[in-house]
Image (tube, rainbow, N blue to C red):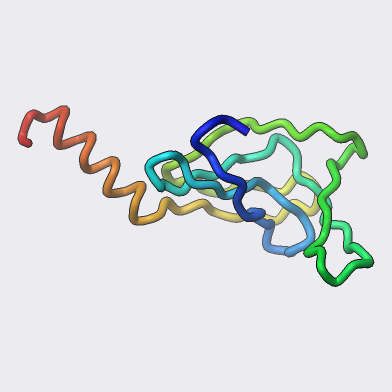
Length: 108
């Protein structure tokens, strides 16, 4: 994983059986969505200590991140079941955006 990012939690499709991406925080604490090109299937594990493992749709080990998202994304469709979900930026991302706008306008 790139420096400055910590491992985060799975961003699930509405079925709660497929993983569409991963939510991480960047170096400044802003939540980002690492959006996967293809959904992963949640596979239950036998150990109660594990929360489950994820396997790519095609059965391989590679997961391709197609976008790193901070802003709003509407209608992210699960390519396994077809259900959709929307990513809404956190308060910290909105504050960061407003800071950028203020600096560009020279009003600060």
